[in-house]
Length: 309
Image 1: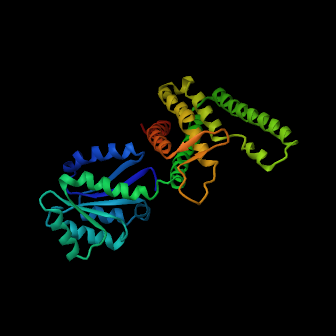
Image 2: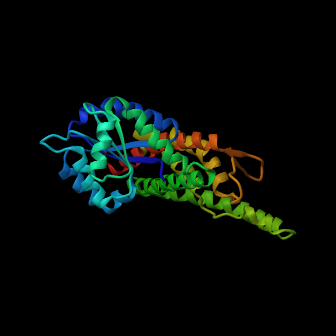
Image 3: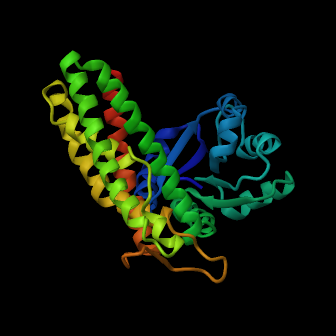
């Protein structure tokens, strides 16, 4: 499971489903997930999508309308999808047919794993399937994986931004950037030397837990925040707030989740670091929500650095 909840939505008149998309997006975002509908208006478009191996791995749910126009009906689309993607849940819906009628069509066509709904009930049906799927992965261990995966993506975006920004600086700016990066490394080396000196008197292996890499993801964030204050990147200075928010609101929680090992016994409701800070399931929901908002800004910043916006 990822922060993105990807849905293949087969509907020949996509403007009809806009009233459903907005509230579904809002409700999923409240749980810390991004609703990502991929609309297909024809069987041909469906075939193109499901032929992509990456897509088949990443799609979480399929929504299929009954009347797809030109004499094509939803059960035909589902049968074709099932031939390639056999184990994904499907919601079969219609504006003019009852859920019972759709269930009968699914039965007659030997279609399994199909939920049926009228268009007016579609939002609740989608949210019901969503909640059923995510409950399986919202224990702390799975949630930790979701958070770590999402923050790893942001770390990579930070790296790419720094490389692109370096290329946009003049010789003096590049020298200043490298000097700033070295300054952070020197700080880390000083800390590590201090830790090393203290470890000479260590009496337990647990005393070694503070030894980390010298140019960390946090350091790269600090360098990026510094660059966004400089004149060459003045047009993008609004993104500095997002970088700082990520440092302050995401990194501490990410580190707590990443540096603790959950015991397999029972169902832990929180993890605690050495200083007593706790990340609970409720806190992980807040963390996902924060990451979603900031991830969009990091993507926009990277696009700006690439000159695509």
